[in-house]
Length: 435
Image 1 (spheres, rainbow, N blue to C red):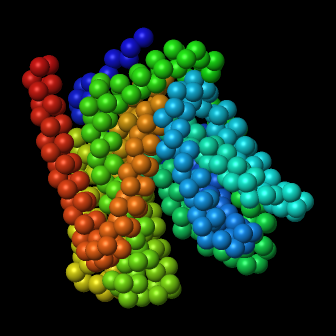
Image 2 (image 1 turned 90 degrees about the vertical axis):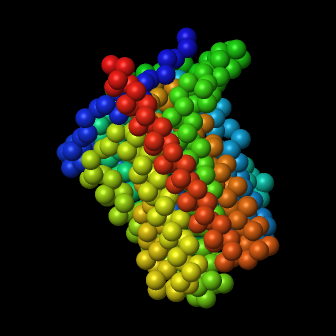
């Protein structure tokens, strides 16, 4: 049966704003959401351990930088190649049980790596297979989590809930790699992988108390025709029925293109534009995470705005990031650059919680995983393109000029957001007149 797209004006722009502090307090008072947050914080720190430990482990095992980079490729391929397809099945599974199974699967698979290595049974091929399967589980977890959040909190608390959940990824980015480096030096890379596996197991336990409203399974047995029909409905919802979802996807794709390009080039910028070493680079990178934490806290506390105003927030984030990137090029002072990078991190943290909350409002719950899988595939594709294009540009035309291109792209994204906001406001007024 075809799904009727919700009227974004009637259901979003005309709704009353929720007091930010009330929404934040309500989210934290929701016991199940608190358990989910704790589990995610632990697993995200585990992910941070994993990023460094796996790369170090492969390099120690092989002594080859190329073979080490294959790990990154294998971690990226599943979401790009299979993400949109997986959403069809994820929509048919209970979200709580799926998250628990995926956490336990990642724990078991990660534990296999040091176990097989200790038994001298780990080959490079088997390691690559394990990394790929772990990435498959991670690919399925993201859309499932996005689909579970609206089952835990109220409609007017979605921005706060997504911002609070985003803070767990920031914790992982800030503390995970540092803890992994210290752990490898003190306890060995194998024990760090054991710790990572334990983090996922604890995360699974934290999800046991969850009780999600309307979290029912429809079964995963599908004929080819039923699968194609479900997949087509998801694509149709994003690209045809719900123009707001499509415009949000385009905005995030453009934003990720410039933002990921900048972050990927930070070491090059530090060396060739700011003329600093690894220690100062670490400080600059930490400023990115601090900016993200500040904005996540602000979003959790601030009023949840109507949809048009949320798009305006994304435009402001893009403007701030674009101007900050250009300022780094113009001033080229490493101490002042810390402040600009903090602004960039603050802008980056606005985008995903606002977009996620908007998609969760617009999308029928039975299609949530499909829509987020399609959306995540587009976002990751643009991020990968940003790394490749701006990496190539840095080699060909220099890091300084590439920095200007990154900043200009963010300003173009902001311009598009402003036009989208005007269209959204016009639609809102037209709906009011029609009523």
